[in-house]
Length: 450
Image 1 (cartoon, rainbow, N blue to C red):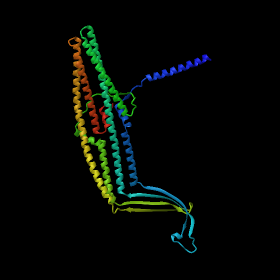
Image 2: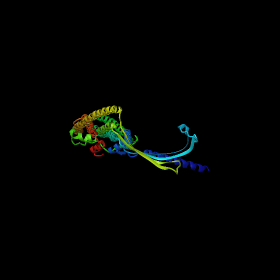
Image 3: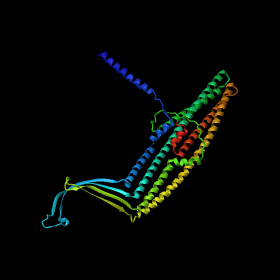
Image 4: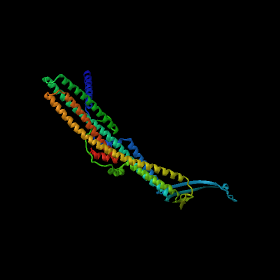
């Protein structure tokens, strides 16, 4: 029995150890990072953004309003009614009193089953309200598209920020590699007696500074990915790896005069104002139609009788014409409509100027950023050549490594200038895509659908 107990305990301990080993192995394994493209980021951002979701519900609400207006203006109304009653009547209470007739008659029953229908034949006011609701629905769809465009622009900016942070981290890694090579060279020359201890110490300081900068760059990169994941509705703990890399892609030159017509034809916020104005115009027509006559027909048909089996079919149909003779409220409503039209005209004019300003600003930034990229590339090439020449002079023993350290700092500055210039150019393209409308389509086209 004792041997059996020890065997059971040993088996239990082995089982626990196996489970712990399995858990430790699973914990040690890291899942592959999520490969995130710009298009994927935009799609996820659109699904997760609350503003887009709310704009979608407003479109659905506008569709419901349109259906209600359609019912009031054009569709018939049909309802059914049935009743059964058993009653008696006090004839004297109705002034009926004859010799030999009882005062109270009944009880007697009454059954009625009937369909009622009503149809507006001419109702211009309701019809114009229906047309206004259609324009309001179109405006709601444009507002929904504008909300999407704003989210696309914001997601693209976050993606660009992560790309820039990643580029800075790669540049910092490259500088650490160069600094490590310089330190190895200084140590070898010091061992050979062709360099001083100061050269070694100077190289060590440079490597320490570059390692410090690398740690900061890597942390900034992780924070940029964290912010991107949060705004895409993803688990902040998800490991992300950007498929796109920060790169310069020139854009064909264009003028604001050439781009304005297409921008006004596709800008959702501008089109929304235009649709709102059309809705107001329909409401103005509806206001005038309050003076016009309304023509409708209504009728009913059903069976009525003292019993269910004795019901006889009866019905009626009639036409109706309504005239408005006095309606002071119409004047007040007309003044309201006139004020709203003036207000929206001012908004449309201001929006038109705003669109042109955004296009011109984006084009100026594109031109400036393209020039900055060219200058930054020249500066980076010159700084690289300076570093190579300084390394050769130090290796040949014609100079100490002060020139090398200085050249490394100049190259780091040139690399940062290049990253800033390319980021500015990409951001200017995104701003132009937003200014032209159809933001998602334009951004993906500019960046090669990456």
